[in-house]
Image (tube, rainbow, N blue to C red):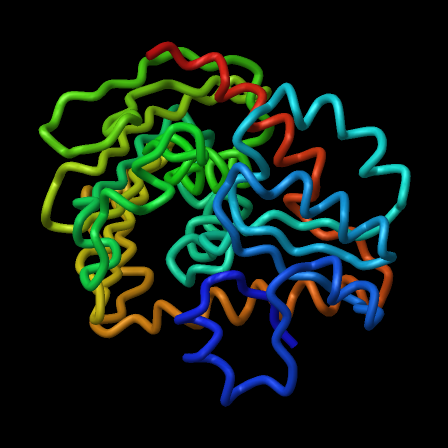
Length: 297
């Protein structure tokens, strides 16, 4: 079953679902749902989460948790009072490359971590090539757009690797000629509770899509690079300080980008079925986004 208020999408997906509603009220009045998946513009997330948990449904919500952190603060206790499982999308935790980084960090592969540097860049008009980017929620501040929210994956997986964020310093910029009213570049530093620093650069500007992370330790260096889209090429290399050599820990020239989304959904369904607490729950996502609010534009 699906709910979609956009008529062309209703018509397109009608063959795959038995029933389509154009508003959530009718859907919840008619049926009971174990899980609600919220895949809407950012400014709608919180009210839709509240509606779902009030109707006794667990919730998977696309990142970020919200557009307005003050609204999240005011609704937090009410939402949590229903004691439902809530998970915010964090697909990069299920990316093969990031899982390799996680294992290497956990196994002390490169010794004590000194710092990390992460980058993501993707030209906004190329995100959905068949649509006008000026109509995306990404382009509209009041709908929760902006690169620092769209690219919340970077601080999310870095927090997963190195621990919660204690401090954030940096700035948001609008420097391109893209016709948007949001930031198109963000450059900032996270200080994790472990003392590790993560340096992040993300932008809507660069036209060759790239995502990478370099982790420097006392015994060596890890480097993940993913480039392109359909196909995405992904590689994780390891540099050993002891022998001054690079080696490859993971490589895929035709990475299945969709599998990470399947894996995170299966993970959440399993958490709900077995009454397990998922990672990146409401509070984890809330505190990260609260920290990011301190970025200066």
